[in-house]
Length: 365
Image 1: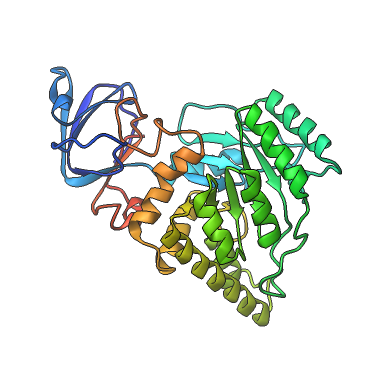
Image 2: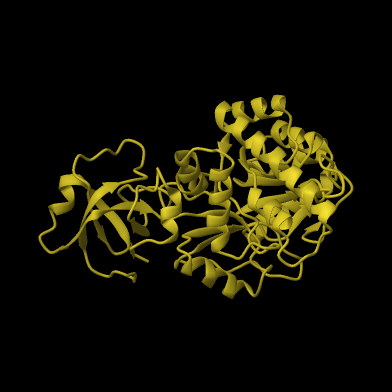
């Protein structure tokens, strides 16, 4: 069951997962009112007007988020958002569209949209410039337009013909990338960098990017540097696995074998990253080949689990860590007073089996 809740409700649960830092109520209960979490633990029972719901057989969890989607790919943006909502996704981060497309309008209904507008750099979802100063002016222009972050396409696509190689391996110079990050920081904006290969990924880490998107073919030394930096990593593993599965038969058999090798390289890098403490975050590239909006989150979760990452890493990447990267910390991704009460009840502990969020028994939104 699901649906908007307009009255105060006290919910009793088997356990509460995704609690915000500093909150550890002994009693698994929460009070929600007017779409917000008002209290946790024993304090949840202090409102005599609240209706009490017994969900004590289930786990309460914040809804998952997707930190890398393309709303104009895979169908009209409203349809893409609708698919995300039906899948239970609370917020999405729209990373790049063509100059002719308008940014999605701000909304208060789920899913929330964090958007970069048109990207900077290489490719059809971006605008390229020649000099760092031109990129700086472009950042100022986008900040004036009210974007939520800056997206940079620092490389082209993966080369499926030769595993380990990237098309346009450094489409935005390190000097330009540093200038972009400095200017974005002045405007209070993070920078998401589409990058694969050592050259671009190394430049993104050095420049202080908020996130590396894709990040294929990073060396162990770069993963170590990434772990020590503030930069998050969205490995978008399912995006390559979709090409390996190739349900529309776009690729020759030998190319599919190459793609599978690329995916295996990424899985190994992800395992190393987890061990090093890299800030892994759930982003899917939803809208691209084989990745439907909404469902893509669970395809990415399954890919991470199959790669050998821990369920807790996968759960945190889709909730609190994604919320932090998206600028939604305290709003979504955790359960704490003041946060939006966009919650799920699941049969299993999502921190031990995050796939249980694909089929919640109840949603508040």
